[in-house]
Length: 148
Image (cartoon, rainbow, N blue to C red):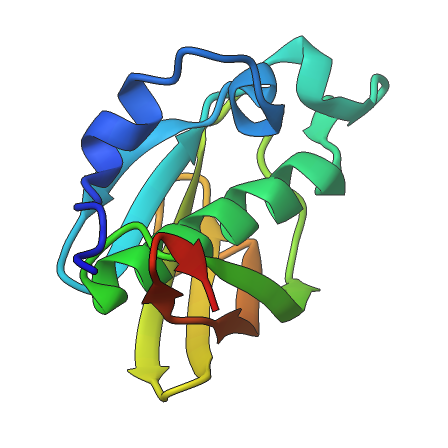
């Protein structure tokens, strides 16, 4: 069975239902053959500490999870089932209040059963990241229209 083609620009721009990422405001930014960049525009609903104006950690976790997950679909060549096994995020600094956060995920190795991912988030300068991500996804094959 052929996988359903995956185009992250269409996927993130054409949601017809409310989901966690759209509620947060995550949008498509860019992609390549094994990487995806998503953007999290600054919004008051994302702020964890009103006194500082800094975005809470949860939306950044979601941003990096979705960016790395999308990278797995790109590397696998289609919209195929997978599940997050492990996702580690190291925070290096707080996001600058008022700035959009860009999350980049890359699937750098794919085996029969595991996809390995890495990436980072920044708020304007990729050389000054606010977080790093590393993780693994369990991948499955499609047979007779069902993930097996």
